[in-house]
Length: 201
Picture 1 (spheres, one colour):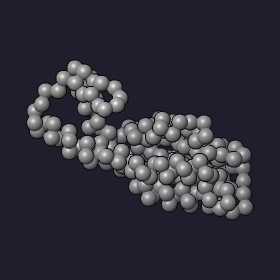
Picture 2 (cartoon, helix red, strand yellow; picture 1 turned 90 degrees about the vertical axis):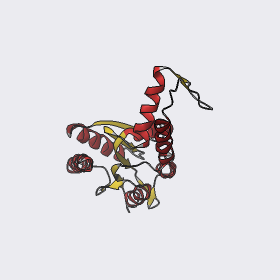
Picture 3 (tube, rainbow, N blue to C red; picture 1 turned 60 degrees about the vertical axis):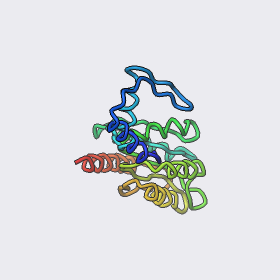
Picture 4 (cartoon, rainbow, N blue to C red; picture 1 turned 180 degrees about the vertical axis):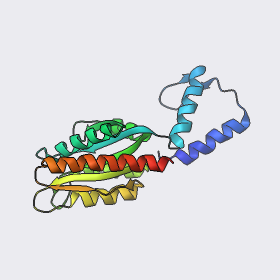
């Protein structure tokens, strides 16, 4: 993600040189031969130009299950709006796997309960990691529950904006989300999907 402009320039240079490439052998990783060369160069063209598919990524952590309920309701709302969704609990999922999925997704939603007027440590760590990668062309939002004082959702929104994500109005819920709160989660999902589709036009 952070080197996309360099990759785009290099691919353009390769095209201009008219090289017939038989093998791509990076200093680490898979060696690509024959027809695989065009496959991997095509993939890098897509990745470096921030091409995305109709997928949403929902990442969250939860303290007592309230933010998890919101994540599930948002995921269902995304499905109902016609997008594919992948949901990741930050303490149960590999961050590198999540980042790989974010690379090709249009939408990113991040959820956290409030702790000490801020976000959960796992969410803060993940967003710091993500900001360094600078993903492009993403639409997203923040969500979370709180008890006495909110703060996590505001903090997540700030981090997403610094990362370059176009943020749609976030959603905070006090205590355990009820039926009306979960309906608001579905509405948020629809708003984010609509914003992502508008960005494509």
